[in-house]
Length: 284
Ligand code: MN
Image 1: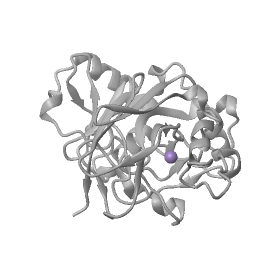
Image 2: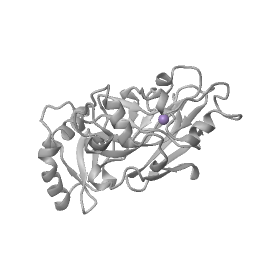
Image 3: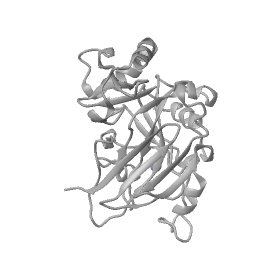
Image 4: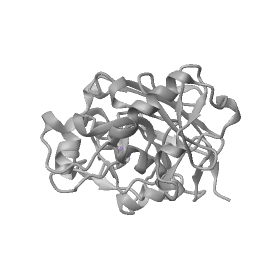
């Protein structure tokens, strides 16, 4: 199923007739609007049959008449994998790399970092670059949504704790500031347009994806090339952080990372998951 957040933070599912059917009443009435996806994921075992019925029935809002927001605006944790593809490691270091004067340590050493949850935006927004004289890069990533409280799971158990997937951009300021600071600015984590539930993604270890800027392909890879697979990331992080329902993991970006400037249009396509297009602007 494809789950949406739309208009005034309403929950929806894409129906078989391609309309968006409202699910907002399936979470407690007084749930803070940005917490609704967390509440839906927590309640999933008891509401999924009803969501499937509504999806089959259809008769919701026509997609073009609603404003699609970030499908998970307020996770408790937004964890990201550093250097998780070998060819991206090579392009960051080496003779022509961005950081050629230092060793580029991969995920097996750096493990993970946290991005600010407030950096999340959806396809209704723009990527805003806050400094005119600095370099900002796109990073195409597969976003993982955690389904239940997850502590100390093995790699073999890990995918049972994954709720779904979403296209995710990890926008990055290059420079000497701390990594979490450079990647946490407002609008620096676009996700969406929907979460696809894990039952509809048969093999997360074999997902093709690519990113274009103004129609030109910049990044193209497959999750089979990950240094730490999605299952390994969930397992490793859960050994020391109790992952919460609705938490997001950014799984790392492949080679081809490059600069974005105001006026660009960035599109991330993961055929088995979804497609996200974001315009780039200068922050006023
Ligand atoms: Mn990244």
